[in-house]
Amino acid sequence: MNMIEVKTLRKEFKQYSSRSGLSGAFRDLFTRNYKIFSAVNDISFSIPKGEMVGYIGENGAGKSTTIKMLTGILTPTSGEVIVNGMNPHKQREQFVRTIGVVFGQRSQLWWDIAVQESFRLLKKVYNVPDEQYETHVKEIIETLELGPLLDKPVRKLSLGQRMRCELAAALIHNPPLLFLDEPTIGLDVLVKLKIREFLKEINRKYQTTILLTTHDLADIEALCERVIMLDEGKIIYDGGLKQLQQNWGAGKEIQFNFQAEISKETLEQQSTGLTVEWKKGENSNQWIAVTENDKDVSLIISRIAAEWTILDMKIDQVSTEEIIRNIYEEGVFHVR
Image (cartoon, rainbow, N blue to C red):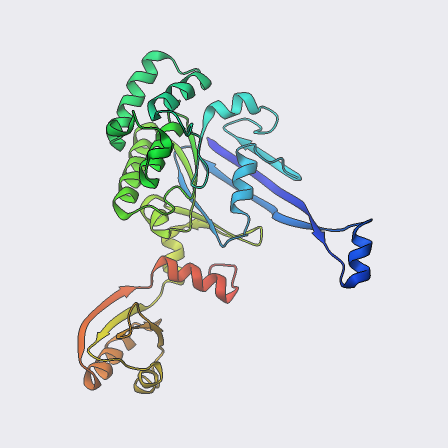
């Protein structure tokens, strides 16, 4: 069973276009020019029940617009959307009771009242039976360690505390489908780990389907086996994360921490004839050699070690973040 079915989905917006010059500005007072801008351009995909999918792309790629159409906030210009067997726009009242939504930049909690009072209000909104509420919410509170926060007004919570409460609020009615839009934005590492483990647990226990939109690719790697990549409103990749890594992640990254500062030109001269690209590290003495040819790894290390003192060195596969960045920068919109 598919929880989400999207067919040739399109969303267009009118974009105001001003005329140039003084005469153009005068004419704009009376008549305005508009251009049609396609934020989402005829995309199609489906997501089965129980799957966790990463929905990724650069700013302006159309991710949030898609999420808003899937949750019924925006009406599509054309195409078909069926979510949990319903049309989000035509069956809105029934539909919203079957989904949970967490937007990292927006709150569904009441700012000036205690967290537990917000939970009780949401219980009434979703018509959750008392017995189900007590059992399910108690489990969520214990798992996310929200006990000490329940009596605090939302406005007095830290960002990490609020996001944990937002996630609990989205799951009060135990929805079969959860939309997460930048749920870990601005959070510290420990809070991120706690939220990831919680999401894995509800997916395992309740087969909750999760669509995750984020710029933090560590969230995608920790939670999702499948990714959908968007660019300029079009899907450029829909498939397994491992397949993406295998097809685009050939090669290694060798991180060198030198005793003294070294210029990029010097490193390039020393590695002449090898397939290597040098990138600056986090400090002045750190450089990263990226090579797609595994056979060159030992040659790079031996040449560099013969000339300079190396304090530390680490060899990694090319990261998922680097892979995706390269795909967008190179403008190659298909997997090799």
